[in-house]
Image 1: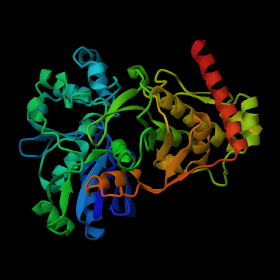
Image 2: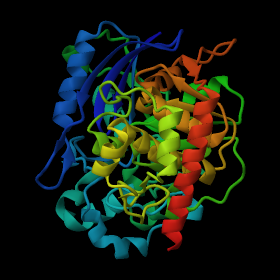
Image 3: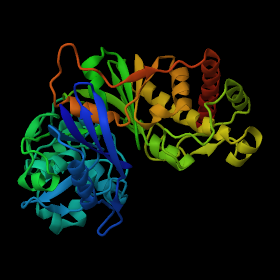
Image 4: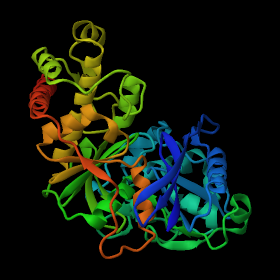
Length: 470
């Protein structure tokens, strides 16, 4: 089956064509995810995204089916005529914090939702609470609240649904253990706005007449319920691997999802949470904005090294460890396992370059990102092989450090869009033998390099502990 997967990340929007028989991408088209400054607030540019999606589908050849995978913490608010009643809020907008005290008084407990309290609009409940107060007239006209992937399936086929995976991603609106709406939904009078939950990958309909005309696709092209992107990354592994294992999904966010891990008490103050997988099961998870941090620190995507930069040598790592040259968290504050900490270089960056060369910065940044990822693994009780999806799977320093610090095998996907394969595999039923998982390869660094990274990360943890105890 040939499936077109609309993959909308916070940084990039993609359309990937996937062959589900071989679990491979046939082609990928990409654009930067557009955000408009306003009015009335920063919002996602749905018109630009729709133009990109339609043009890509029109030029990509015939497909059997279309589905969608997107970032979380985003909803579309439709009026009774099916149009947007308000623009789609950019979850990084800080205005919902204006009502933080009032919202905190009504939101459900972490024990019920598995959803930590997050800043800005990262809790969908906080978005809706703020929008209802700030835009009362427009909010009163809302007839339907759609999760972000399901807004696009609605645009494609005209059918409304919501998916548990998006509502289960720190929204405050869902109870992972029961599969029901949280108490907040009924308390705030939002129950009537929420369409039925449908299983990700389920057939929702066929392309609408409008979309048939605009895309030129066949009228037999089916549209399927979408999924939250991090949980799409899990799907091929859930279908093909025995537990325990851990998926590290990387993009703007680094999401750690532990399957069959040790029982742990999740700590909402450290950005751990319960995700909900494609089969509506709770998954202990942790997250931090690692891709955004890498871009801020280097000006590049997570899979791109500086020109001429080879992976760190054991000699360089030993010298950096001896000099206690570290970057301590957090480059992006307010999220991750160290949300209240402020980033600090133990040796000023310019001095680091002078003493050790420009490549040293790459190694220190990789050590920082690996160190925070390792802490996220620990907080979720992760066990077994670590599977890295997304841009960081092309960053050898990060991968070597992760292998060294965890003491477990690290494998990485060779797919450029790890989420697309999972979303597509939900459409075509698994066969026996199981469907082929995305191409993976296990990294096998030199033992000396592993030892050097272990010593470097041990020093990083000591420096972090000393700062936090001072």
